Image 1 (cartoon, rainbow, N blue to C red):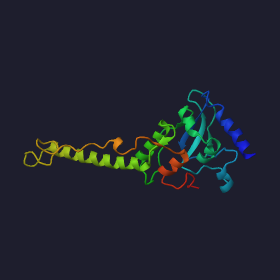
Image 2: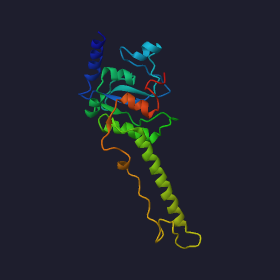
Image 3: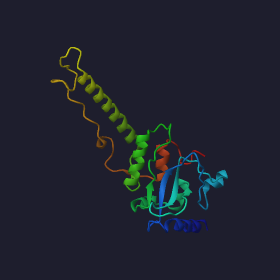
Image 4: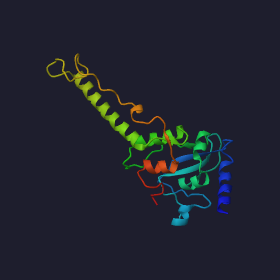
Length: 214
């Protein structure tokens, strides 16, 4: 019976996606207004007795930009994955999109830049992305390289104290070669790995589970 209800609810969600009348969006949950999960059998509601979405992320089923379809209908990430396990197929077909800037929560140990890029890659690569530490290592090394290059460039432009070339200056004749700029191919494997969206969002948020904010 539960499986039949899930199929029925999934059909309700999916029926207007191919025509473009509705689009499913991944959003960050605004803190100024509560949103309720509309899944018929919301597991979070059964456990907490509250349908309020307290996670950092939610799904919003909304009318397309060119059509008015009333207010959004919101779902927990895990509730939607129970209804439609293959979300990657929706991404490939253009029915599931990020709604603007989606990143890790503020104060999270994972950087905003790395989390945003990992989520962006998941959408651009049809449900596949790279280990979050690949993004973090690349970001750290590139920032270090940028800082070092900027320091030497400013120092050279302002002139050295005695006005003569310095042996350790990248921009003086006879100085060392400028360090090679870090590139993504040195930090990321050839192929990204498939991962569920709920797992990815938990990873970039540095949480054991997407609903860890209950």
